[in-house]
Image (cartoon, rainbow, N blue to C red):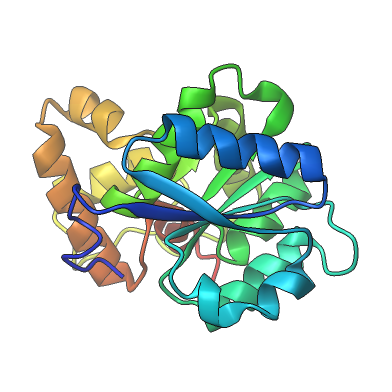
Length: 231
């Protein structure tokens, strides 16, 4: 939910980690606490089951970094379970899996970010991603994943009114529909949309806010899904 609290840049972003490998879990926890200005990571779990047993603590988390290949309940199913329980938490997938089906299922279950571990060439990308989803209600994924998502939408999305493969929403202005097209079909960030449309980033953010409202969604991944007729 886009509340004033989320938009306050000065607040600490509480990050939780669900990862079965202790060394990786500890590496990311230390990295976030040492380098993530305005971030804190105190909650770490080795499984979805242990996270679910600690829902009271997890309610305070802003962002969960979720592995997929977990023992017991997978990260994909875990995303759905935790999003049902913790509506306001943002889940970013952090995994080695990168096949289209896995990515799509994770996003459909409520993840707003997706990073492939072996492709994080710059750890700052992850910190930027955490800020993007927590403070700006955006989504965070590496460029190769964004392309895969767009290709998947084009392949499997259902079309009601043809508008470059997405639904045209009469409640949105032509410019807002164009922004939605770039978001849903090209996977563009707000900055890229602003450049293409010769607008300020602030104007694009305002467009996105209206798009989310009309489509009854909370973030750009859900907006892309809805635009392609995928509930």
